[in-house]
Length: 256
Image 1 (cartoon, helix red, strand yellow):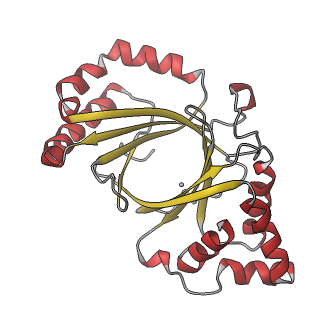
Image 2 (spheres, rainbow, N blue to C red):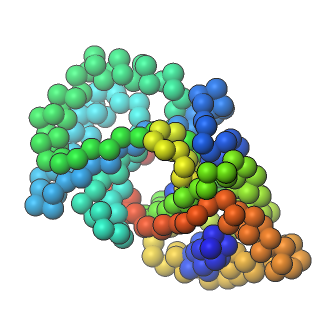
């Protein structure tokens, strides 16, 4: 199913690992690759009020010298359309100590409590880890949309990192002109793997030219060899879920 999913996404268009996905530790971190993410649910009647207060709060954070570059996304598909996904990347665990001290000294949460917090019905907080080595994210491209495939890993999928590297190496070898990244939860159950794909617009979801599968077949010499790679990965998970998210520059911190 993964093979069909990725090939389909490649045809249509185209948000970890070198580690045991079920056991990540800070010691395994090399470059800064941790992500701090908050998911906030806001009643639809209060969206405008929340966003107005949130924009003011972001200004307060910038003025106070917030070193985390918080970026905001909202669901474009799915049933949780009243959510806001607020992410900061990338850092190491040790940086959180200084960040907590800054937050306390700056009293930045006073701005939050008196502003957008009043309209948030539910919070969810988690940390995740991005596999920088096997990802390829274009920093010079403005990605308006991000498509995210969530893979529900099987309990025995301890060598999924090998498949991730194999697929990524293939994508790089065929010079696949897309942005992608692999990410895994550090907190929570730790049984999910994510592949994110960046798009400049909707048209980018249906690019011209050869598809991923066509380029891969040409590079490897046969369709069977391509199938083998994705079949090996397909054995690692028991299901998938795909959603599209919209980047909200109007709510995010200015790009650094």
